Amino acid sequence: MAPLPYVNAGTQLLGTIAGLFGSAKENKKYEKQQSALLNNRKQDVTSIFNNEYSRDFLDTEVAKNAVKGITQNYDRSLQTNDLNVAKGGGTVEAQNASREAANSSYNDAISNLTSYGTQYRDNLRRDYQNQLGQLFNVEMNNMNQQHAQKQATWGNLMGNAADVGVGLSSL
Image (cartoon, rainbow, N blue to C red):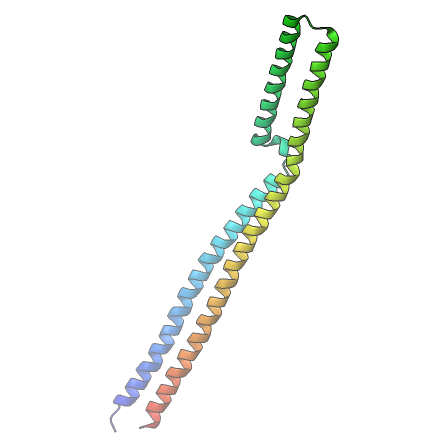
């Protein structure tokens, strides 16, 4: 009997084993790189969230610019009121009333601005949770793909082993 069927069976079995080891090595390398990328992204998102969430809203550039604009409008309003009172020969009472109105508008604007701080923090938290959720979905998808690959690998190994067995039994 010729040794060719044994050589074919042995070659098929060795090829399968070599393929399994090579594939496993590449998969581990890929998984390690992907895990590092996901962890880095998670750390970046968490760091940004922690820095922004603990920060007072009025210390943000948006709030600082808004306060600056509100203050400029307030100053202009006082100047305009004083000028109008001076031109029109208004009384001290009229001047005080216009200043009170300007003060009230200024206080309302600042109060409204501070209420945006709550919305700002809520939006930060919501964005953070959404980004973490997306990263979780990527990780779950990767786990499912890895599981499917392992199942397919074992299925291929069993199929090849069966083929080898059939080949040897036909001898």
